[in-house]
Image (cartoon, rainbow, N blue to C red; front, side, top):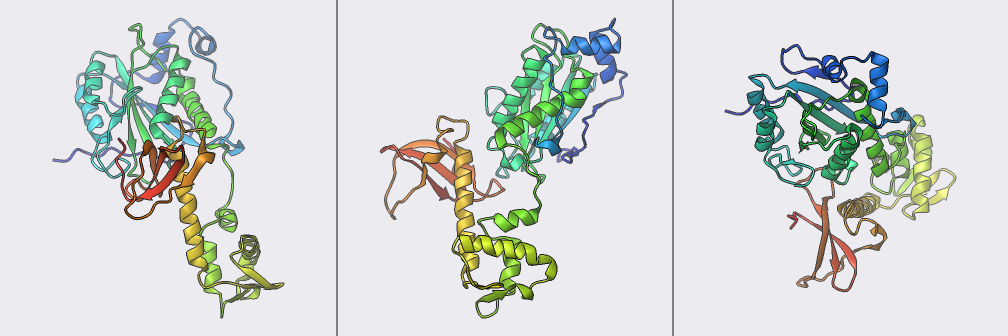
Length: 376
């Protein structure tokens, strides 16, 4: 019998929420209060912001101001008599078949290992008062080159903020439209005391930390309409499809297009002209070659392959050497010997073509496309 599916929350619903999973009377507010029973709310806030307790979190900047958007959802789950069985059900859900990057079964990892058994983690939680279930869903999750590295840096920052080493395991989900993470965090500090996440940190701090990290990796978020991306892209776009549909005898005139599209069409044609892919014949007329679609598709595939290769070596010993990347030129029947540098899916899905990067014996950092590669 298949395990019940849990809802996968990956829409953006800030601010975050912390809620009970089972009926017992503990709440986040009471857990915080028990950590500082004699403190009024204002003093408690100062306590959790002090160096002796929780590192101060800088005021949140709006995602609209350049921060990458990340949804973070937290559940505090008390370890009641029936909680162990519920935790194992959740573990099986996270590691379910088809959740992995290439459609394979999901796999847990932790701070050091890429493949761990979460059942051992669940057994260690059995004596805790509670544990945390955290969903981290970056809006640009498909652009992050390494979700495991992202998770480890994120949890390292949480550990620093809490002032204690943390024990956690996490799994990646790629089967819901946008890659996201499920993190299980023990409710114990390294000295054996209960780990309590301050209410303000649950509501804002975790989301801020994840957004800061995503912005550091990917750069500031740019507010751009899809039409703007289509205008300046070096690949085949929906706007190109419209333009090609209006070509007659190899020529395109602006007045053949709907008036609402002419501004973007003019800018697109000027961009294509600067690249040498179309030629202007008059103020509002362009010569459009019959193979424009194939040319743009070929250029787009090359750029996608180069971008995937850059992601493949991000964070490793070759991470700062993207400028060295060059296509691998090899004849049929030839072989190449070198050091494996990384592999990354070229498209948005893990089961498609991949970009393989290696450093050859003569010192070149080369990339090539391949159908499927299993990293050593």
